[in-house]
Length: 118
Image (tube, rainbow, N blue to C red; front, side, top):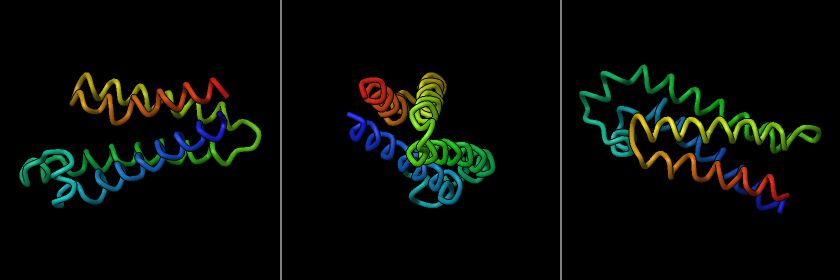
């Protein structure tokens, strides 16, 4: 069960690296605008805010990778960062788009379930 938990945690971390890249570097490019349904005008107006948000997603990914690499407190670190991802996804689903619940919160919840079962 620990292996499954670690695979899910790794997938959540990689997802957040991808989100970070979209928000920090591709926000006003075709891939970023498509992913977040932005017009060129709205992407230009919100580019700095998106980059800041992307940085936070990068920190979530780093924390999850840290938990995967930690030999002493790995499960506690993974639990903390998965909870952060879950809460961020729930807040995003309430305030921005319901699909964030499925993209962020659901994978984090699965990771937490597998962690607690291991």
